[in-house]
Image (cartoon, rainbow, N blue to C red):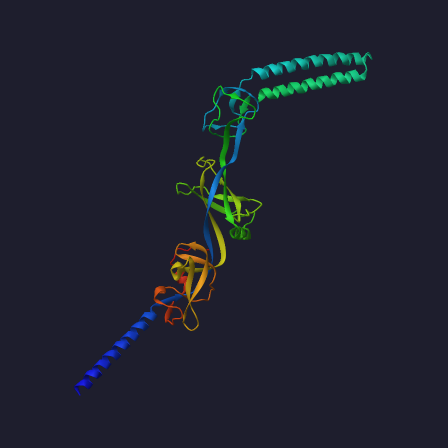
Length: 360
């Protein structure tokens, strides 16, 4: 009798423990939180490494040979269009001009004499034409000598900033030698490469009247205060990288940007009907991302997804999920494949609204 009582007590205890365990499992199952992807129009911001160029950047080269007689500017100095920068010793070119002027005067006198004789029918018209040709040739040679002399004065072709000097005062310069470079930094051209898929997205929304605005993150990790606009796209894709070069134009009123700088372009791309899920609803296996999808029988099924873009706390999915799918939001490490669960459903719009999403 005593043994029977003990046995009954043990069975009751085991039954009570089993019930508690079963209830505990149910409680754990109830705690699973499930949601669905949110389909919404949104903007994503892409970063692109960029190269910054002056809107005009040219090499200043000597067009005549000779000794560098004078330098009127300094490295880094701002110069105005037409301002004299360098002077090549002009004595030889002055002498050539004087010689050409003398030959022109001689040809002019000869032509006038021949003209008078022609009017009296002393010389033939052919001789007059020959004298006129000699005069025209002399004038052309004088003009050429004048041009050579002018080339000894090297002036700024536009407003800009002088770069490093490649020559020094007194240097012997040959025709074509590099003197310096000149940059017009009033506006800057910023080049960056865009993948083909993002190029197609851009072209789908771009219009001539509404140019896409972009921002420039400078090398010191601060944002350039003036936004730019995409003004040009190169003709061809790079076959090796699959990218195409964009060009954005930025105003530069404070001359902060200089030719040759680098940075990052930040371009916002609109996405229509984007599939959005919280990042915490995903897990990774061998660098591939997965989610747990809840089927019609409330069983957990793993599914691979493709992430198109990443924003703070959320992923934008390009492949693997539909708007009506149910995905496990919490407890991803507590479930197994094909496990049947009980869950609570969280509306995706209220869930995503608590995350850092910038949406249209």
